[in-house]
Image (tube, rainbow, N blue to C red; front, side, top):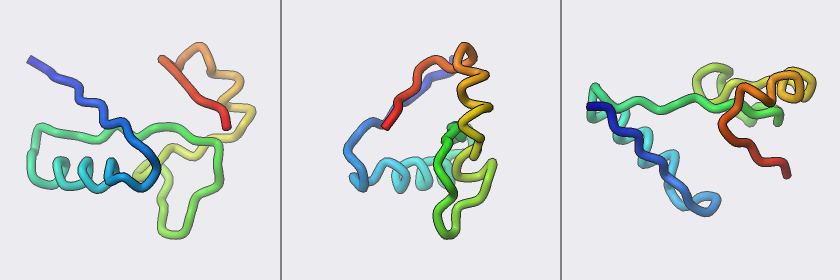
Length: 71
């Protein structure tokens, strides 16, 4: 049986750290790489931390997303 866990919390509360530890310690746990239209921050790599996409790509594919937020 497959189980999906979703970690939700305020910025900098440890979501990424928790996901990284679980991914490292359990071979059947994997982080979903999400899409973002923002520019990569120092050290972030495309397809590893996020899928960095253009605003146009994002808008053209809105019907493929389960949910999204705009800031």
